[in-house]
Amino acid sequence: WFVPMANPDGVTLQQKGLSEFPEEAHADLIKMNNGSKDFTRWKANAKGVDLNRNYPVIYWELVRNDPGKPYFQNFKGDYPLQAKEAVVTAKFTQAIDPQVLVTYHSSGNVIYWWYYHSQPELVERDKRMARKIAEYTGYGLMPKEEFLGSGSYRDWYHQNTGNRGFTIELGNYIPAGHVPVSEFPSIWERNKLIGLYVAKEGYNLYRDKYLTAVAIPSVYEMEVNGEKTAVPSYNIEGYNYINLRDLAVLFRDTETPFDVEWDAGEQVVNIVPERRYTLASRGALVNERAKAVKVALTIKYNGEQVAVSAYTVNGATYYKLRDIASLLGITID
Image (cartoon, rainbow, N blue to C red; front, side, top):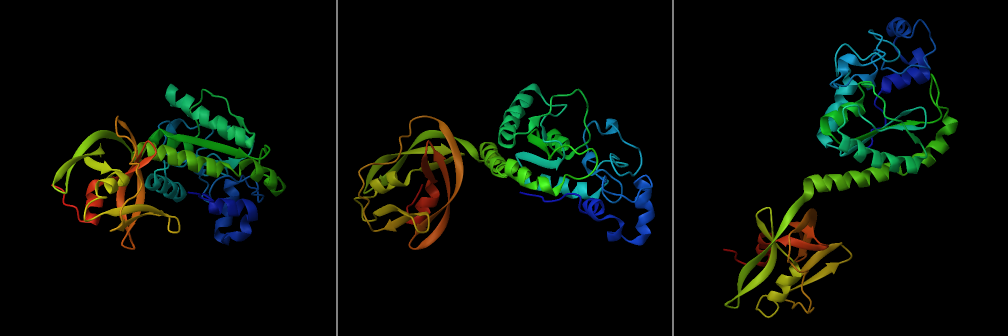
């Protein structure tokens, strides 16, 4: 997921000034800006709340440099999640459950990667990914500091999930104001791979967290042509999963043979009824416990695509026996 902007009215004020706001709001905006009509240094939303200090971190009461009133920068708000923008961002984050978070700010060409309350093992874990981001961007890693922090979105995310979170400060350091647009080509060149890298890492983490199970070797007895035959399978989450090729070999010499082929055009496995499976080899060996990764698959049968439950184990795909039996009209006791 990409969220292009978290502070739209603040950005509008910083870029275009009072002209984009109702006249009745001008006096308050000027007051929050220390009497100045130059808003190029503005960092808060249009109500004077610094959004990146308005998240409910455990140290919120101790957030530093808070002016204690609506201001052009650093005001954390009267209470956490006071700003609607922060509420929306927090709810969206909880809804999508990202495994990695990257927030882009400006400026400084640095990466913030460390959270004050992180456990030692999480610090080392996060630093490994931060180093990879630094390798892509050429930005430096901010050193660990003994301060509580700022009440930021990233800190809140890390505190509540324990997941990896990074803040990347774009562009050469500007004390007050925006990074010149002339720096964009360099910024893009440095950061163009970060989204893809984070998406890949995030998927791997999500897969290991939510889609991974233990495949336990088991033997399933099937009666074919009046004879009982043992079919190697895996028990995953209480259900038997088999390799289609094993089943095709088993039914090859029956009155209900089927073939298994790959439909390159539709990118699906195709089960062809009444055609004998001709390959001599069977599926992968089932001989020890292994990690099973859930995959979303469809099988083409009689010209129609059907969703089935499947896992990959040691590079081979195993299908839920009940799903395949239902397709083929096999009775399971």
